[in-house]
Length: 207
Image 1 (cartoon, rainbow, N blue to C red):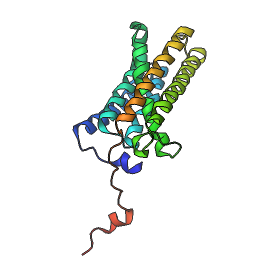
Image 2 (image 1 turned 180 degrees about the horizontal axis):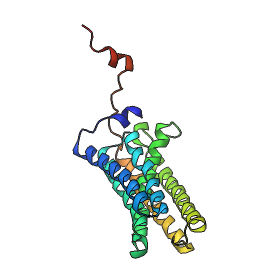
Image 3 (image 1 turned 90 degrees about the vertical axis):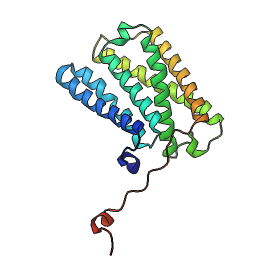
Image 4 (image 1 turned 180 degrees about the vertical axis):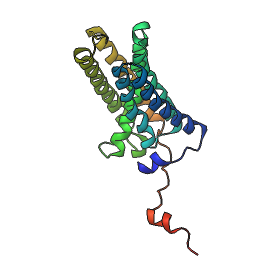
């Protein structure tokens, strides 16, 4: 993971993915300086998810799609788009849960918990079954965070039974789409070359 995280960008898509990470970091600083502390907290909550695709060595196109989706989800909350556009919440739950489920599947594969993504050569039914379940679990956690926010942080967060069930349904559908995607496509790029040992870097080339 360290080699992938420190690997320099080589393509336009890899530069774009890193630019989205920089935007995420700058967004946290801007929210902390000019917006409410809760807004800064929401923006900061997106940062780990922005970093994970690079750490896991995922393909640049997915890295860009994940970064854009995650930033859209976080800043839609900050900018109150969920309240302004009634259907936007469902779109974000569908797309963002699908992205997070793929990232979680890659984490589980890389840590040898269960082989889900193509690098582990699973049977086709494995991602089709497990990724929607991961998405539903993530949706439940998402709704718990929203409940905690409205109960203990701000009553401006809109949470009710229909909203919760609708969000989880769209999250589950997003997970099903993500499972199909993982059957068809390998989201992991070629492994990064190992970093040189510190002694080799200090000693330089031999004569």
